[in-house]
Image (cartoon, rainbow, N blue to C red; front, side, top):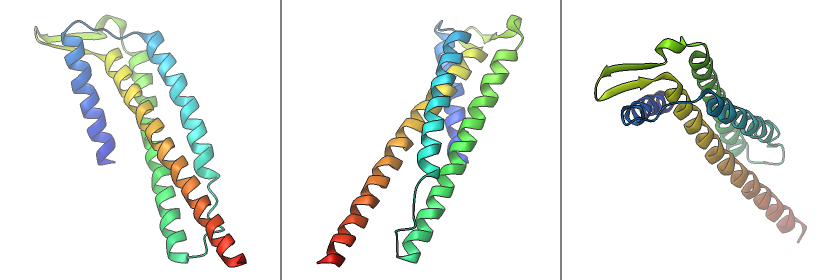
Length: 152
């Protein structure tokens, strides 16, 4: 959870820096990024919940793997939930106050904060999807190697 909060803070700082140099957010970009995030999230979740640990005979390893999968599931849900909250907040924000100028050098653009948050969440999902897929294939290879060794 601390990593999620740290990512959100970094997104706000980065978006504020971008807004201060003249970059502004766009609702169409935000909605497109969120749609892609939803697709990646759905694929990642299907891979995660279909992870089969029944062929792992070592109880300690199987338990650790299940705990790790459960942790990953919870973090993805929290991350996607945070992105959803930020998206909804940006889309329902008062259009007259979407860009707040605090000082000449500090501009807060709510839409840009949402875009950076969803983008970072998308990168996080893709990175973890690749890690999960690699772990899945590595475990399959180990199980196959054990099966082959038992038959010989």
